[in-house]
Image (cartoon, rainbow, N blue to C red; front, side, top):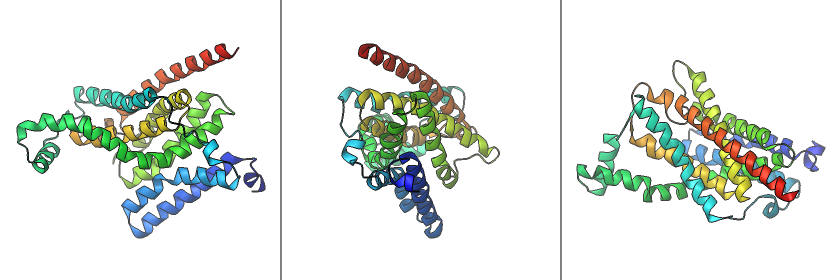
Length: 289
């Protein structure tokens, strides 16, 4: 314990605090059955663990976390990339019969609230994917920041200083996925007949997109690309395509964050960004030599 407190093992202290804060949040939800309170406190546990670690070990939080905004183009790309892999996931999903686009219940509800006729469904789809999408991403950034200060701002940064980017990304991606497992259980995202498949698919999916996060974190030297990636991912996977999809018996198995098809597409994107990161690091080493 003395080593943990004296800056000799910051990662160990981070994990201990993460488990402690997460357990308190989860126990609070089970005890009081307040899901909204639980989900908001839960999302900030990684950051609380990271910031507490830095404070305990007397580190300057302003220097320890990459707070600089970075170049605008990386932030814009961070907004678009999650839409791209989610779009491809659902496009192939619709083509393969795992669901269909244009949920009439959701569209009619939105049209009614806006006082529009049914033939304006295209307007809802367009607004939901553009203007509302931007506001949705901005709204989600609060909870995304709560995670990303911990996952990328602290943990990935520490690991990259000691290990290669592939191992570092796999460690962060695996911890990130496993930390979400209680949420999968609470949200009953798992499948009734094969619950292990939901957890496995979710792990592979997050492991894949973790390489996207690593690429932009290194490229931009900013935590904000990770925050925007995370927020955009949550919006387009959960809110946009999730709400606009007409479900069938196969939808839960193949689409969404714990879906098999999402895991496959995410893994392919992850492999692409792994290659891009390797080339980027090689180019930096050539310039430095």
